[in-house]
Length: 161
Image 1 (cartoon, rainbow, N blue to C red):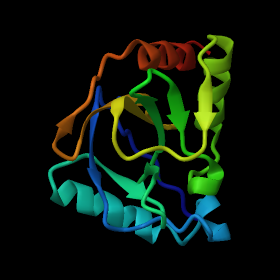
Image 2 (cartoon, rainbow, N blue to C red):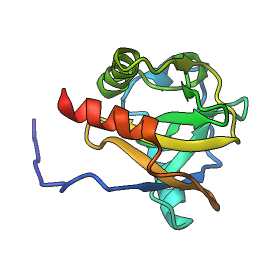
Image 3 (cartoon, rainbow, N blue to C red):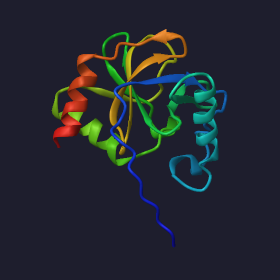
Image 4 (cartoon, rainbow, N blue to C red):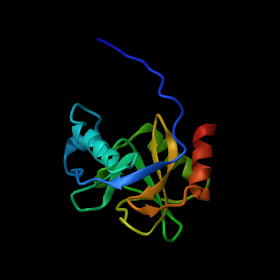
């Protein structure tokens, strides 16, 4: 057993997204686990970086957003509601994701779990244990609001507790 540790620094203030051509197979039982089969996620991230973005947006086999290459996705939709892809859509369950869903409930912010449209986003945030919740500054060439009040409230709630 070999364990390496290194300082990764503070999380970024924002992340830019590029839609990956690599699809997330939401029907595969392995898509719900962090396992040795994480290669597609690494390739989606590499593809995003090659396109000048920080993170890859992975669509599922139906063409709907499933997750970031290394993070879960939370979207403020055009109607002002908060949504996140469900596990059935290809999202991975995780500690930070569950904490954000619970924080939204405690703040009275309804969260819809299920299919998320590829367009019509007012804002989006990416979450994982290392970064917490970081707003997305753009999706491909389309700018997104980075200081949306819902994302700010959730990020603050996550940091507080």
